[in-house]
Length: 87
Image 1 (cartoon, rainbow, N blue to C red):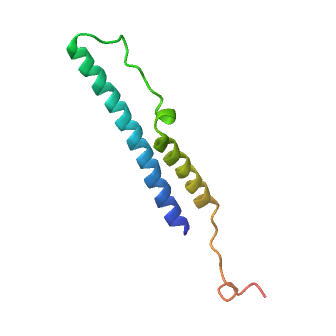
Image 2: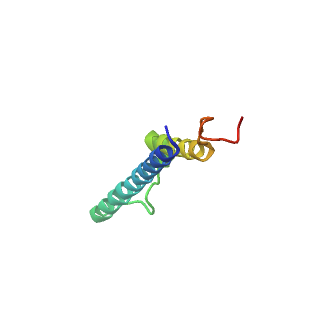
């Protein structure tokens, strides 16, 4: 996998992790607002930690970090014919 592909895959996974986190928060607030309209609600919405509740958020986030770090450490290999200074 090339360096560019690692960055693209890491970016996609980071985007998916953030998207899932955001959707979890939207669902939480939508449910809380629905409870408000019925007349019985808690003072604050009960926050569920999405990193522990939804394993895909955690998996995508850490996979993105791994791919970004692999992309940073990737070096371009050259053959001896491309580098004339090596004899």
